[in-house]
Length: 111
Image 1 (cartoon, rainbow, N blue to C red):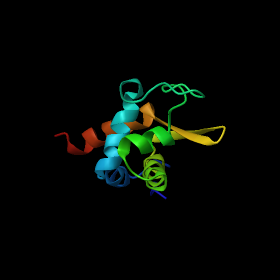
Image 2: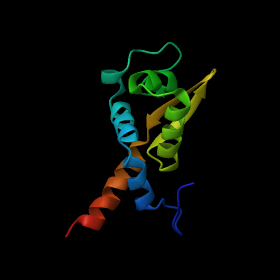
Image 3: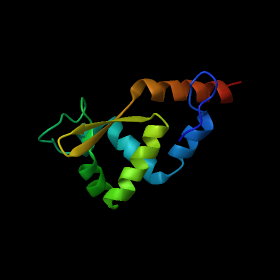
Image 4: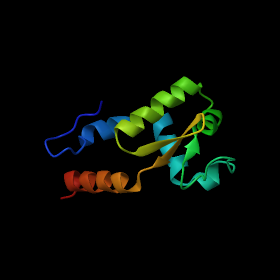
């Protein structure tokens, strides 16, 4: 579980760790523009519902449990949200949390 501070905000260092893995970073990049990286899905909209773990698994060339583990780490860091439809889990970026992270990062490194 990612560390939260007293206000319930996730620790930025935990978020940075989540992005430090090249597979997680690449998957988040794909999710930011899903229509450019994935085919249409039968049961879910790529943007509104997210991308099926099966598509992420195929594109990444990793096993499904490995992809699920990576996506759960991104979810704990609040970069993505998940949604179950039928027997599948779909992930999409949490734009607001990503922007919060970027602002926090700018606040730490800006003069």
